[in-house]
Image (tube, rainbow, N blue to C red; front, side):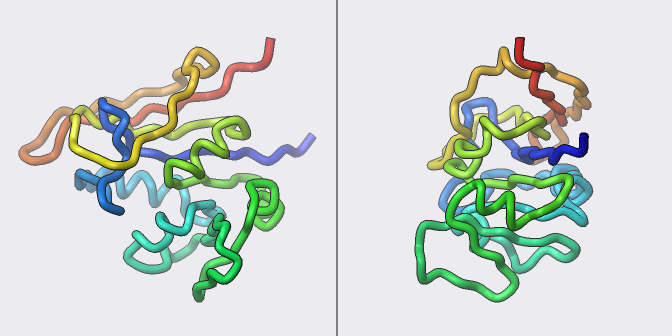
Length: 165
């Protein structure tokens, strides 16, 4: 049976922060490279604020923007109003969900995998990853990186949803 895989790509600080004032509160080049590798060639689902925080359209990826604003449109963005509409629009075997907090909250129940960058810092922030029951997930892989100058330590973690009992 061919099944679509929905996966989240997120960097989360120790205190749950994922953003501050529309930006990430850290700059980790390795995480940006990993984000590119994970999303290249795949449709990305994101909220409007996340789309507007990007430096522009990211090459090699479709940008599906989930928004409640019926008038919102932007060149290069495909608009969806619901998670189901976004997934239908994606129409792909692998769909990356890339933020923000509300979009992560909507897609957590649908996700098969989470590509989690665990940032070992506790920056100020106004956006947090939604609380979820991590007992329903199994850590499949972890790659640790030590702090380097102004770059905090971080781990790349792959979480897989445990099969339903």
